[in-house]
Length: 202
Length: 196
Image (cartoon, rainbow over all chains, first blue to last red; front, side):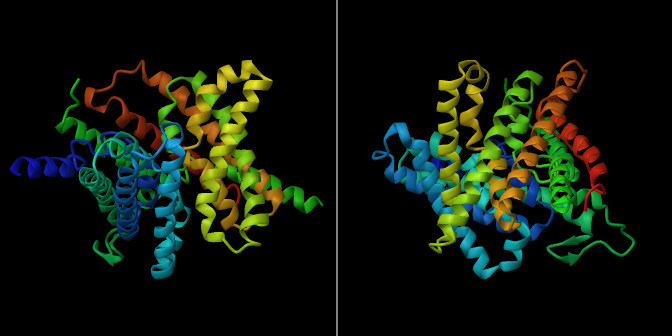
């Protein structure tokens, strides 16, 4: 039992730093870059994407013996799309403001390569339990990177955090940070720092 | 008539430069980083994307207008669009293979990758959200894909030079690539006053 728990824990935490989908594998960064200019958007996107990863991993894992190999990509796409539509409708109904700000990127969760990657490389060959943990771990890793990035971009760019003023009036908003170039620069610097601390194994 | 032409050309310029898909909207960043190692592959990918994105814009607009809206099933938009794009890519692949084996040789490996290119789905969704007419949709799709192609080829050129540069070890690879992309994006911001 202890061994199983340990294994589960490893699956769960692997995505945070060691196999972080954004910083390490550089997957699914379109949405990471696009929504990370405000913390609230990041949180909404993280929760949405994590939900989609976990549910589609679970579904793929449950159906793994019934999906014909040849059309598996199409099947995965339809499964993922279903959950994305759920998230989209939920946001539209309960958080119209956030839905408006994130705009097309909610629908684009579908093309987030992290999700397809997990379905293909893990869920299609593992039992539902581990698949859920794996999906949750990767989802957490994705969320973690989004939060880290917006923790720099929002204060520097707007002087706020989650919409509250954190930097005083002496701070001149560094607009560049919330514009597209800022996203590339911050992500690049994070990857640099991370690779300095945890050098890649050859 | 003159008005329409002006409007469309403004739309084209804005899609290519001001609202560049990769550098301003972050759509299609994955292939942008993935296939930009060599100018040659970048050109191949760009051509494939221009082709598919323009077609996909047209196809998704027609489906939205004549199938989803009349039957009031707009909430199926995402699923419908991704299926259209996937089948469109497959179809284009088959046609090219039959009609021009030479073109297939150069575009072949890029086509399957396009299905997961969020720029294609992105342009389709944006077209619908902005309520474009059929003509604007076509022009916008074409302009957006041209913008993607421009960014990709420019960036591949930069990266070829980067290979020769002396870069600190931990900075190599993705980190320097992203910083370069940031600088390129910065220079594209210079276009932002061009079209409102």
